[in-house]
Amino acid sequence: MTAYRWWIVHLLLFTSTSARSDFFTSIGQMTDLLFMEKDLVMSLKDYIRAEEDKLQQIRRWADKLEALSAAATEDPEGFLGQPVNAFKLIKRLNTEWTELESLVLMDMSDVFVSNLTIQRQNFPSDDDQTGAAKALMRLQDTYQLDTDTISTGQLAGLFSVTPAHLTLTVDDCYDLGKVAYSEADYYHTELWMAQALKQLDQGETSSTVDAVAILDYLSYSVYQQGGLRRALDFTKQLLELDPTHQRANGNLKYFEYQLSKQKKVEGREDEEQQKQRKESQGRHDDYLPERNKYEKLCRSEGIRMTPRRQSRLFCRYYDNGRHPRFVIGPVKQEDEWDRPHIVRYHDVVSEKEMEKVKELAKPRLRRATVSNPITGVLETAQYRISKSAWLAAFEHPVVDTINQRIEDITGLDISTAEDLQVANYGIGGQYEPHFDFGRMSDVQAGGATVFTDIGASVKPKKGTAVFWYNLHRSGEGDYLTRHAACPVLLGNKWVSNKWIHERGQEFRRRCGLLESD
Image 1 (cartoon, helix red, strand yellow):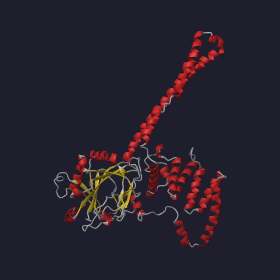
Image 2: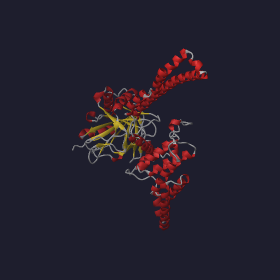
Image 3: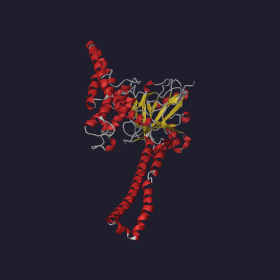
Image 4: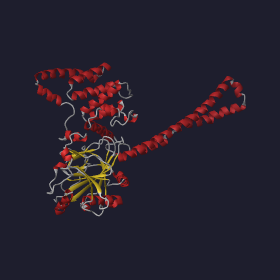
């Protein structure tokens, strides 16, 4: 199979600081959900007004008859001695009460229920809600946030008084804990159930969750992590609130038995064995061996750039060897890293172009996929959380213009390049460490933020393009370009990627030209 060289250009189209976010559904599409919900609220208000109008009619009719009946029953015979009163009584009972019955039975909710039924097909699913919960936990781990910081809405410290819509209720915390429990993630189950219990103890109320239910989850999740003593304590607290709780009574005996056995084992362990046993508790290791390094870089920790190397990074005006398009108006080029050479081009996409690309991509956004290394089949993966769309040059002049601009800046022939990929990251959106090089196959993509092998971090900046070579001159992959897109903590990140395939002598020439600058 022919070996192709892959280059990547990342166009950071848009980055906002909005607190709105997303998991399986991109923020680009979540805006539609916000407006849909706004329409539903307006429809609900219309329904309420219709019900209030109906009740007002009924109330006026009842008030009128109440006064009439009070007067009539004081002297029934005298009242009915008036032929008009007798006629109107018969008329009311024969006709008007029937009309009132029809009014009372009139269903004012038809319009609202119909609107709700139509819109329900666009509602997020249980999987979306689970995904959003897991995304919050991913942010919690990556950025080392405690549950109270998230629950009180202080993620960015933007508000002296946190708006209520940014806080999590007892029910919210409880639901997050349940999601973790359903995934056998007892570490996060404990954290969020403890937060729910804390908020109950602080006086917050809930109509659906009580301390007994929370303590039941807490005791089991702590036990699953090896915390027998604490599991026993939580079980005792539960039984103080509900002495007849069947499962807790059974757990009490079991935990006491297991604890007595553990004490005997601990008596025979040396200090090193006890240390290893304690370290095995808590957050479990996963499939990513460089997890700690990756998360540190996401927190801007562990960046490896000495002052001497940093002094050799420059900003310059770049015309790509006096390219006709840039002789008068060169682009601004900035060195982001030296080895491998990573550069950023500033102001290469206009605001109008960015909005058009987002407009074109938004209706097509689908959960991003990766190629299964064994089967070659495209599939979703937990380590790649974003939505993406592909735009061809012929679809709009703006796409064609951006493609041409990429060719002019890089000096690479884009006739063998992939279409322009547009990705949107929301809550917890990420693409864990990966390589972009390979043989001719389905493309893997992601927004580069941190380079785990070299300790580099490239932050997104609106309207800029980031470029690097991911192969050596020999065609071998440059393993130093292993990179990852960190989870989006706050805001809405749009990224556009362009993969450029080059081969043979042309590859060596073009590579040399770019590296010489």
